[in-house]
Length: 230
Image 1 (cartoon, rainbow, N blue to C red):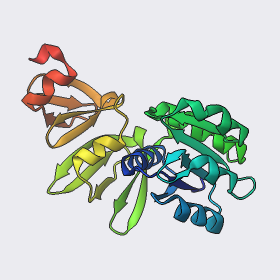
Image 2: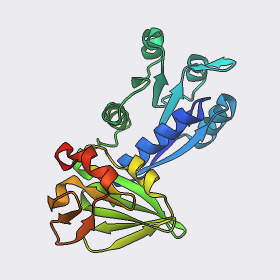
Image 3: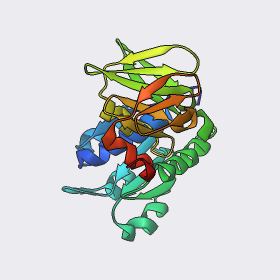
């Protein structure tokens, strides 16, 4: 995605909004505004006309189905709910997709791809996935395939890239791990995350990456990625 996709998510559960935010960051190229108050969210949709809306159904005092019926014409929206019984009504309202909580990142990616096709913005390809992090006062999009490893340094994360540039962002390593796909990255130490595809060799004390960098392996993390290292 070369253009930023403007999105709004409405859900009265902050944790559910955090998950959508995390997944949008993993996809990259998406700017998300979140609302716990459905009325405020609807007003924002009418005012800004976002590309994609993520809409919960069962919210305190109001149904997302009612909100959907009041959306501006041609609004592209995806229902997110824990209740399967609303699926038929959701599609009757012309929802582009229906995400049943708890949903995986891959399922979220499918739903967004459907939405992008509907609005004529192409689709997402896994090889071009990015994360978006803050650097100084700007947002920086980093292709996941370009990340070699990440180091925690006093409340910051140093993101080392195969392209050579190191990005320093004020984000904790734990939060970085949440942004990165589990199947592609692993934590090997309290201070390091590495890309699985960039590992050359390892033992229970250290790991060598394909560029020759050697990193320490924490005892409590070793057995988690290789039981033979106990």
